[in-house]
Length: 494
Image (cartoon, rainbow, N blue to C red; front, side, top):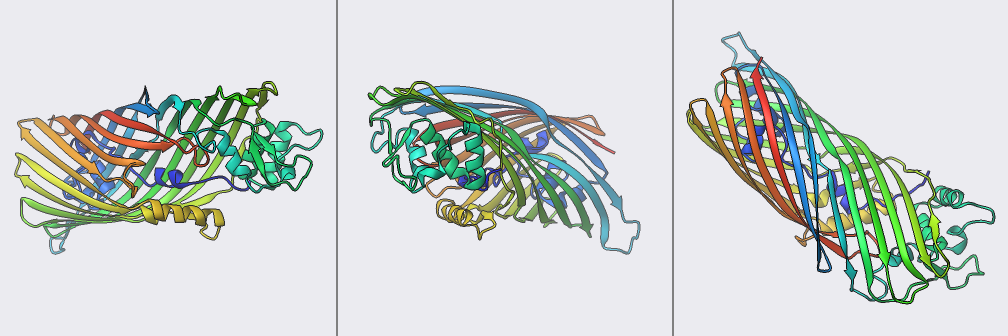
């Protein structure tokens, strides 16, 4: 057990964002469905959508997701690909007509919809020589130095007769994550106490000489964020649809990073390996309120409020370090899984407005606009000093961001031809740590009558300036990410 883990802004942002997922038709219009309804993925977007169905309806979608990352690290380019295939959507809506002719409520609906709201499968590699020398900020040694600063020597070293595993576990239980990082740096000979004979020593030097450092850094992540919506909606008279979603969210995320650092700076330590593994699970709750209004037979407007999502998150982590130099090859593999206390995360709410124009049975145009203030993301309890510090960082670094979605559909006999475009602003004030997202989509559908088959290809691009670590070695790898998706959906009336 370890009392504190270094949750930071990247963890908070990861679970606050969502991607375009869902049915092939929904994706073909780039998710611009807030004023349309009549699609199971639209139910997850605007809860009034299920009342637009004239009959009970169900759909299921399979998707192949291909992620390509092009990484630039100090002028050296590398590429990596990741491809996954899964069931990313499924659900059914049950429509009940009101047989009371005197009631203004025409029908009501109940629905259950599953959406994979974010895909975490990702891998990239940064290889290059870090030439940003100065106070060891271009070496992983600065990571351990920053954690060790101000800590007593007797709180980060092994006792006589202790193994690395025993010491790592005891230090984690007694003091927490920061002390464990300092322990790894000290016991691997990266750090040197200024006064090695004084247990109260709190000052350290680095057993490396300044200069250039070669890095080979790999990042691999798997997992997803999912949502199950329990929906109820109703149609009032001929033109108004109202709905409510109660959403159950779940997180499953695993990440592994591995760094090799080499230097020829005549240092006591010339070679370092550092591995970190993280496993995260979580559950959460949110709700949505939505409405769709037909201003005329052709023109429709939609409005949706998404509440914050309140998560409870659990994390486990493990580490490994090895060094080589004048002290020989040192390997510290504690074989300890640190299990951290639960913490809470509150993601920002969102307000969305939508417009749509329907050309009878010929086709449609649709536009969605939404806004989310990422700076209101909170790690809880806020009374915790570490969380308070990170929440201040979140408030200072993140900002509100808008999303624009545009989609169109043209019908010819049993065929439907579709296309869409979307643009998402960066959630960061600097606009570079996570850049703007642009995407487009193309789709084709065939109507068999009671059953429909839809196929869509969509692609999105976003750039990231990703720090290798949250302390010390914070130089960034510039990652240009392209997500390409092929989605096949089967939908039918019940």
